[in-house]
View 1 (cartoon, rainbow, N blue to C red):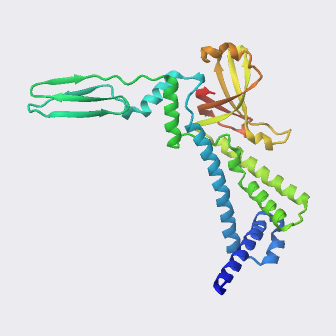
View 2 (spheres, helix red, strand yellow):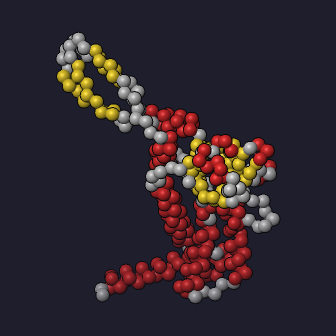
View 3 (cartoon, one colour):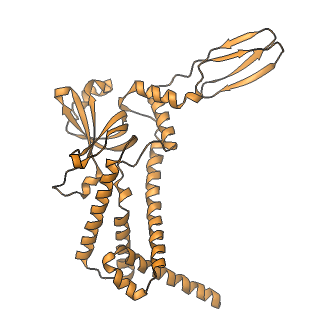
Length: 320
């Protein structure tokens, strides 16, 4: 091996050791002085390494979001529990208005124009013959598809164009510091056999967990617009107003203590609005949890200061 190759190899190994040790110094605040004194790391080196770690964690979260997005994009059929059919028709027609043709009018000139092919997006393909003195009018009705298929197409396009939030039920988005900390601890203990004070580790994890919880609560309090969430919803009977309440326990509750107020996503529906084939079945689902997907609009966000621990959603569709 030449001198240059040897130096390159050695430099690479030194860089790897410095990076791993620097992870420890950045993430573990209580150990910063110890590591810095051993490696004498500069501020610029520490900042570079922090940026590298955050980019790696960001990539992991992006991958998770992509997987969720692809899952929804690959849905082939929709089995409604509830559907606001009128609203679905409206949003579908508005969204795909450029692709719909209800009427085509063609009027010839005094000269023979020959044969022209006219392509009608997603409706039909027709040919028009125009000749001198002939006036032709053709009316083409759009192809009829089911409400479920219209919703599926609409949802697919909305997701592709990033026009709906898929992140409301993804607590992991706010756990970057905690994930960063745990990765650093794992690397240092497994690769270098560092012995760490468990009480200090626990204290740091609790601190970061509280930060993650606080960040998530803030995000939920600022949530608005259209969302698509999936999870286990508890069906609660509301006989006084002849309705069902759907209650989803948000993942942030996993990090709350027993005394903390829990956070829920809720939907209230009149029993008569359920799909007719499910009305009887729902009587057996009261107080049970079922896995559902909900596409809807946030009516009321979280507001913990005013003792509102529920995110209320107005659904466009609920399906499995």
